[in-house]
Image 1: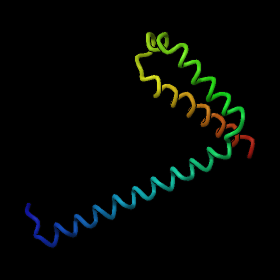
Image 2 (image 1 turned 90 degrees about the vertical axis):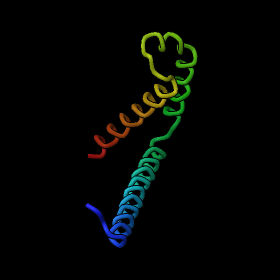
Image 3 (image 1 turned 120 degrees about the vertical axis):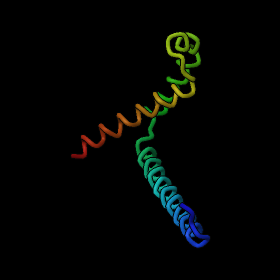
Image 4 (image 1 turned 90 degrees about the horizontal axis):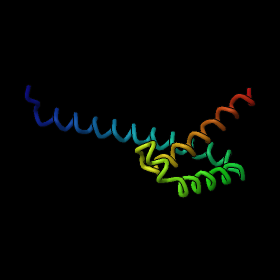
Length: 95
């Protein structure tokens, strides 16, 4: 099925608008997540961040022997898990 020139430009414009809309929503979600993360950032989070980084630095070869993953990725997963657990705990105490 062939489209005429006007239809093609219409579809392109709609696609660009849809992509811009999705990117905008994604930016808003990321900004809200950053705001929530800043509220939960305290000394305990900083100590856990430094502790997990030092454990990965010391035990990196052992961890890589059992889990064939990138250690930076593991560091990110561990710290995001802690943030999500804290957010869940905070949501329970607010109710």
